[in-house]
Image 1 (cartoon, rainbow, N blue to C red):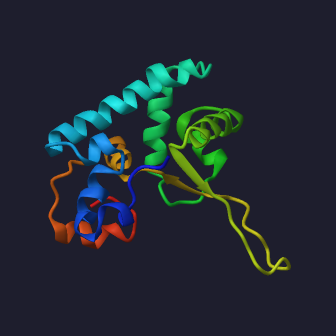
Image 2: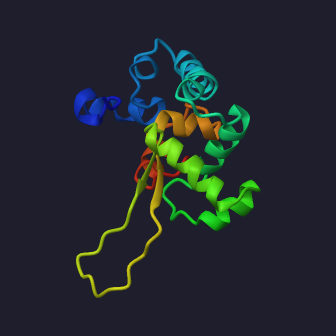
Length: 160
């Protein structure tokens, strides 16, 4: 199941959905602080307990740093070599980490599509953090922003 979407919570809750994300405990939390705490705990549990339970043996600190780095690449084309240089790992390791985060529905890689097959095709996918609340938490963005600041940044996908 996917987290809450705008059609489920209504247009009046768009700012709350954008800041807290769609996971029910984060979205429905009694306060912004409780929502942020739940998201931080979720990320820690996911990295430290859930992934090892799936047989993925990557140090949680490494995958956390990688995930935070990817949050800075939100909406951009994925350049595996650049990510590898930035993270200090081979592009094969980068692809493996990306595959793990995509397979666990934490990231979405939007692959290009062209109707005209004779056009030069861009092969690099765009990268998206699937949940906006996790996106804000990974970047360390506080949730107390004005509605005007949110409105100016919501459409771009970049944090205020």
